[in-house]
Structures are given as structure tokens and as C-alpha cells.
Length: 358
Ligand code: ATP
Ligand code: MG
Ligand code: FE
Image (cartoon, rainbow, N blue to C red; front, side, top):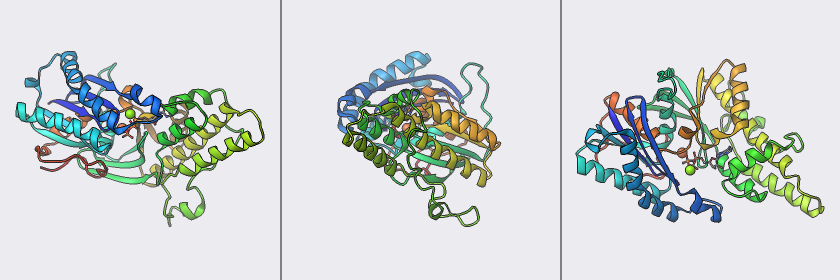
């Protein structure tokens, strides 16, 4: 099926078009530049930017794919989770298109779509992806840090663990601000960390104490969960101490040590969850998947545990419409009923809900 996917959960306006598991186009317009001077995404600005960007982005996507709206078999749209106002713009656009064209509409989960993108054929070789039934998904972004078990991408998704406070990307952005590295913080810290010594300072690894971890037989309350707010506070305190002593701030060392703490605990808990849950394949997704050290350490730890790590191309890891189209196509191919046009966006749509029922 030819499926058009629409994404607007945060600051990316995305329109993607797929045919089955083959990607035809992935057109993205980001309002990131408009948020830079505020040091974070401003929901109102993001919503207005979506409104401006949708029609041009859609036109561009159709032109790139060489198809018309008539050719499309189904439309898929992110209905949550995400910023309420931003979601509303994409959902209204998708509903209008569905009404005007009479095409079926699927309201889908943004987080599951981050996994669905991993099912698209390899772009260079056209090879089909072979992902097993019992797939792990490690999603690390500005809004989420979660480990999932995907038994079926079209309807059986289980949350194994998640952050109990800040998302990893959010921690990067906050720490970058403390270090004066600007926004978005992820790429800035990643780059700065290359010149630093990750062992110069030892920052805390959240929720790794025995009272949280328990044992494999008697798991503690947060065995597969993460926490990054204590780490952020530890970095702030460290910076204060250097300033109080009047010493020059070792920015590269702090960045490297912070990054090591984040990446260490994300990769170790993800691998632990996979080992204990009998998961042999794990897919890495979300914007923080761009992080060089996260890919490296997770790759090493997966390899030594006999787990295969799948990392989609970077432009498909950050928010985009292709991932929405990819999941939409899976739903169509599995014969799942479309959602109709009566649904509302849900800013806290649970990951166990893959698409909304009619
Ligand atoms: P959502 O959480 O809903 O998926 P989002 O827009 O916040 O939305 P993404 O666009 O997937 O998520 O990712 C953006 C985040 O990724 C930002 O927090 C950014 O700092 C982080 N990021 C991007 N590149 C890197 C990198 N190289 N290292 C670490 N973090 C990075
Ligand atoms: Mg984004
Ligand atoms: Fe996302």
C-alpha cells in the first residue's frame, strides 16, 4: 500500500511516503532555529510553525515521490504522545486530507513509529529488514527514554522500563545550558566530550543501587528504569564548586564525564533488560541515537551479550513523517481497522496503544 505519514509531535513538521516497506520520500521542516534563543522548544511557536510548514512540506513530499494524493491508499498521523498544540495541527491536517480524499486515516503512536521506521528496506541495497517477533526497542530522545518489548508492531507493545524523571536528551539540553554550550545540547556535548577525559570526574549513575535494582529473581522497583535529574544536579554542583574556587571550568572533561554517566547507565540497563527478558535483537531509536558514544558503548555491550543492535539511518532516528508512514503501512498490511476521524490527539498516549481504534 502507498501510505502518507504526517508527524507534528514536537518541532519537526514531517511528511513521509512509503510503499509497503519501501521509502519513497521523507520530507522534514524543523522549527528548531526559532527555539534556539529560548534554549528549548516553545510549544506555541512550534504549533504556528507547523501551520506554516504543512502545505509546502506536503507538496514537496508528493513531488519528490512522484505521486498524487489520489494514488495514496491510506493516511497515517501521529496522534500522541507529544505537545498538545503541535499534535493538533498535524491531526487537523490529516483529518482534512482524509475527508477531502475519502482515504482511511490511522491515528498512530509516535514512539511505536520510532520503532516502525526500522522495518523500512535498506535504502542503499533495497534489502528487506529481518527483525524478529520478540524485538527490544531502546528509544532515547528529548522527551523519552524507554526500553520496550515489541511482540507485534501492530498491536503488542510492552513497556519494560523508562526514565522516572528527565529524558536523556532533556538532560543533555539542561547540562549544555549549565556549561554554556547552547541549544540543542546533545550535539554540542557530544562534540565537546571528544576532547575531554570521561574519567576526570565520576558522576552518579541513577537508580543503580541494590534497593532499586533488586536481583533477577526478585527485581527491585526500578530494575530497568533510569533517572537523570540527580545527574543534572550533580553537574550543576560540580560547576559551582569550580566557580567558588575561582578555577577555570574544565568544560570538556565535565561534558565527557556527564556523557559517560548517561551512556553507561542507558546501555547497561538496556542490555540487562534484554538478557533477562530473552530479547536477542534490539533497535535503537530517537534523536539521542545520533550520539557517537551511545552507539559505541551500546554496540560493544550488546555484542558481548550476544544481542544484535539495529540502528536505523540517523535522519530516520530523529522525528520525521517516514516513520509514521512506515508504521501506517504495517497496520494496513496487517488488516488493522483505520481510526476514523472522530479521535482527538493525546499528548500522553501510552506506548501500549499502537493506533487508536475506530
Ligand atoms: P520526542 O521525545 O517526542 O521524540 P524530540 O524532538 O525531543 O521528541 P528527537 O528530535 O528525536 O526528540 O531528539 C532531540 C533530542 O536529541 C534533543 O534533546 C537533542 O539534544 C538530542 N540529541 C541530538 N543529537 C545528539 C547527540 N549527538 N548526542 C546526544 N543527544 C543528541
Ligand atoms: Mg525534535
Ligand atoms: Fe520522537
